[in-house]
Amino acid sequence: MKLDELKHVLRASAAIADENSMVVVGSQAILLLLDEPPESLLVSREVDLYPALHPERADLIDGAIGMHSSFHDTFGYFADGVGPETAVMPADWMKRASLHDVGEVTAICPDLHDLAVSKCVAGRDKDADFVRELLRGGYITVETLKERIAMLEATRYPLTHIQQWVERRRIEAKASP
Image (tube, rainbow, N blue to C red; front, side, top):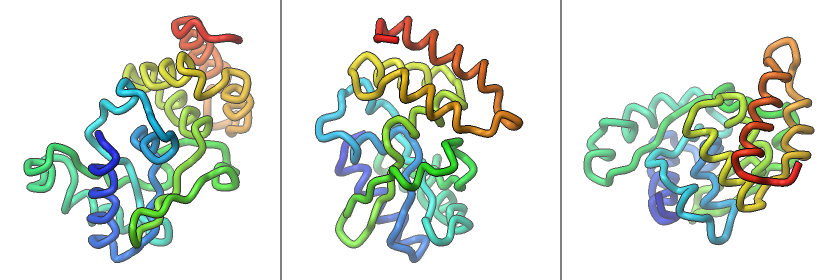
């Protein structure tokens, strides 16, 4: 995905949801978080997002410009209308979030470590690729990532397992401990 494509999805989502603040919780937030993100982090064709004040309107976005919509067929990329519960991050992630103006739309993005936490919890192959690339490029540190993971609810998430998953990604990326 390219920045102009992300901006297109943000503008369309804002119009559909009748709200100008969107929370971008998926990997393509990287387009707003880094000035020159590496191509290896831009492989996704979807933007995971939800309206900040009315997250229940994410279904409207998903229905109108989601996967297999005419928007997707026309442009080759799409919105995935998700909810606040979709990306598991530390409870205080909003304190570290950044705001990005895209015309009349404000995109709210978690910081890179919080975004990486959500990928570590999900633990899919594509998430491993994403975290490995962030580590390899020096965009995040294992130490901070592990600190953020430790902030998750231990009763809800297998923290030891997630920390071990991170350690495997660190070794694969040949990153510092």
